[in-house]
Length: 173
Length: 428
Ligand code: SF4
Image: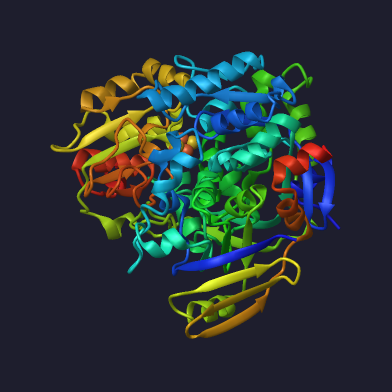
């Protein structure tokens, strides 16, 4: 079973949209790798710097509600993928973004509002592990530790295990 | 128990149920444009899977940046063009015949009641105006759609939106949908189909219904849907006249898709519009909406009339009511982008283009252009645009720019005054 996790960074706002994750002007790139430097370039968030070391180290993103709203661009998932981030944990996701994550074999984990708040309360220096066998998220920092259980739809789990929708669909349909 | 239109369409297209709550649907139409499709094509080629499930069901247009503006966009266009030729896709629209996808494809009669439609574009929800299930998807879904003709969905719930009352003068479908998004918020319809009902919707043209459904995604909706009726049948008649003896027969057939009276909705939202005034966005989210009267006097640098939301002939006819015989205010740049060649031609024939030009507007070829800040009217930091498009995200029409979304009438009023302006006094 796959495990996901590592250093995490918090994006503490609702409704972060795909234009903030990867601006439209970079949609002319024809490879995923080319998107790498532009991650979260237009995100305006107090204390957030897209050039920061914390973002470079991050393997997990923690955010609030309706993450990834706006355009259908899968570039918003790829820009995370090429930056070695393959888990986003949030209160809720926009439908297309969530589906794009699983379609790429990546994880979009939905937790309750209070659980997200407890993770944010751990502050900086956050490390998060996601265990797909136990369906548990373990978050820790110098301030303490939070363990919560999440639900994963059976189909979404199969997509992650298959490495995405294309290999899954190619075998089955 | 009765069924919603979405449930009926899902049932008629279910290929597989891979898990409870997830279905894989057979697709009637897969639409492609040059921004999200080339990476799918490159990936299919790299995997040795350069095939399409059915060239007749794939519709292709180069629309976002066209004619190409630089090497990168020219390469995107070329990948799409070469692929369409290689796969013998007949319905391919290039320079001279191209226009904004969600305006062009309906005009060609590609969308029918009961269809399943996907595209790598979030505003695919527009096509629900025809009583179809049409959803925006990412590139991987598009890739599988192209290859296998299927797409997976979580079974969506339906939110019923009832719009009643009398449409006040100076108020349009755009104002109605902005008001709905304001009330529902940007994720009020996430994972839901928005079903539009009520006397206002019944009286709307297909163009107005498309404007309504176009912005369902701005409330998070999977698709906006209107019940297919006589208006739908009349619009589609040139394309379906061989399938039905009379228009009435088509209308009767379409009715099989209608939501049953005893179907179950996840929620109901009622809007009475008799007192509605023109609406305008003020922030960087499409639910940040105010009455135009509360925004009056806000200075603007540019006016943009076009896009899949409001670049159709009716929108141009509306705007010209105010633009005609007037001049664009000093220091303001007016840009008109008719959404398709047919719209452009019709507007020429009616003298609308000429009146826009006489007012000092620049008229572009049909394209998405400035709507997503890629060409034809990108703003400088600090500039402000009154726009008939559908997204006011930070940086959408140019880094550091501010976009105020509004109706064609309100945009026209802003063009001639140089400020956000209530269009209603111009109509007296
Ligand atoms: S006009 Fe704008 S919103 Fe519509 S498809 Fe083009 S870029 Fe997208």
